[in-house]
Image (cartoon, rainbow, N blue to C red):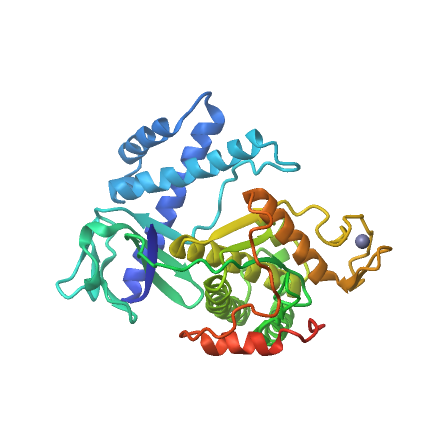
Length: 414
Ligand SMILES: [Zn+2]
């Protein structure tokens, strides 16, 4: 099991220039490996690794990057290739994600060499010839808590508000003993609520979704006012005010994504704690990200993070998490199984059998049914909407109390 901890780094301007240069080199190697694979026949992962050495001999700037960091860059190319192969093999409908050359890199990855932590582990020195040097690590985490050989990878990441250093640490999964709760729940996601579960409870979307979105729109409008077509036509760079505005947009994105991550992990922990099984739709990220509606893209990203946290906590606490195929979950009647066609805007499910439910509530029940049938536990789970999570005192008790209290309310329409 791996965990990632992250520090912001403090350094001089020259050092950041050196980080940028290392990022560019890693990207260069990745793209070169991709080129090799595209032009050759039967090029495998091993060939890419060997190719790193050739590149280092040929290009001085490539030789300046730590050899394992070069390997890591080649691995990135390989994972893009592998993803493509896997999609082809799985016969994923539509585009298979043929690997693309990248113009802009955001990070460079070192493995177990090319860096050294200071005595008190509050600073890191990069020892290859890229000249990054010693960077101060700013953050509340304590690296002294881990053995050096637990650190498998070190990444330098560029963000809109500065540079960050991530440590990928191999840890033993903590032995959390949890009693079976005999509770299973299906979750449905939509725009109306963060999720709706199969007991009918709707977790509202966090406030910052809308607030952050509003601010983002404002900043984006400002940015587009500063964009000059003339400069573009004359092949001149955009004004410095434009670039400042662009950075402000990027920082707002960053802020939302941090809030989202925090929220997703908090809600996920809360959900999984009192359940043995969680079922949810297996929505593909690819289908999620490609849309132009800002509110929807914020929601989708939040949902994806939420799912990852549910799976992470599930693994940690020994719970079952099931991703079910997302077909007809909202169309099918959860009572009799008939397909009841409805448009995206209709909020209620109304079937000839007399079943009338909130649209997402109906979907959540279907998702749970599918989840249970997948793991073959049908009938052994108690799904009682009235006792879910009651009387449990934990650190997240307050949040849970909130949920219990608001569980009978209708899903809020935003
Ligand atoms: Zn029905």
